[in-house]
Image (cartoon, rainbow, N blue to C red; front, side, top):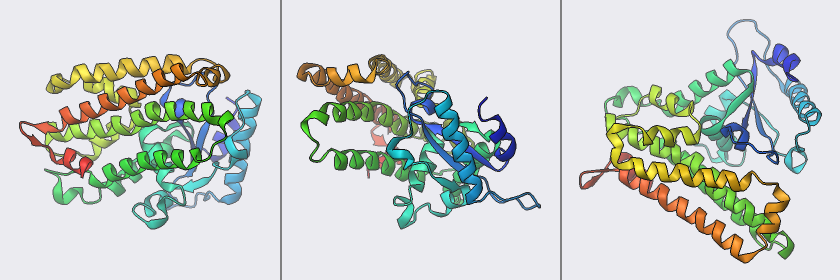
Length: 313
């Protein structure tokens, strides 16, 4: 393990987790590495804290390890390689600077698709602390708790992805349109599944139990997005949703097969109008299937469930 020395030095005080295709366990040969560095909570004993210089050393070890193993360079010359701490991820929750400081993205991807490659115990403790921040009002509403704060942040993350895509797409030169179309195709599959598989599982859990506990949320966070849909497809309580969940899994498998090809080949294919039109139709179809899944899970008789209402309004 190329990060073994860094693990020994920093693994009890910080974690590195990957997101994107590596976090979801579906990386191909052309996949980029998306990583976050998060320091754990300050220890009450005399253990050394994790500071800015430590973060520089750890990020340098990560960059070196990726170069030695032949991974692509981090995008934008490492612009998104940043250092956070769990306290800041929790403190910024609901604050105006949550978007601008990128803590919304770091926090939500940690919960929804993060996979630790260093400091696993710190990573798991971080998830627990972040979830407790979202569940702070649970004790007073344990019989009927709706995780509205988390739901709203997941929707906010999804819309941030979409807004960022649209902003970066404006005035794109013609020769880059095919690459942008490919990114859009991936966004409407992988990022959609990351966000809405979590919303579907929260909706189903509340429909079954009338509440969502911290343990329920932790179970969701331990699953990859496809595992959440697979879980839904095997639950007898939601037999009416199983066919839709199965269709989503089949559609996503087809998407992964397309994206397993070399990126340059895909960019060339996306310059062909017919190929691009067919792929984008597949993306729209997946969106409709995900909508159908939420709609089915969110209805109890003739009435929408409370979680479904929060998602819609």
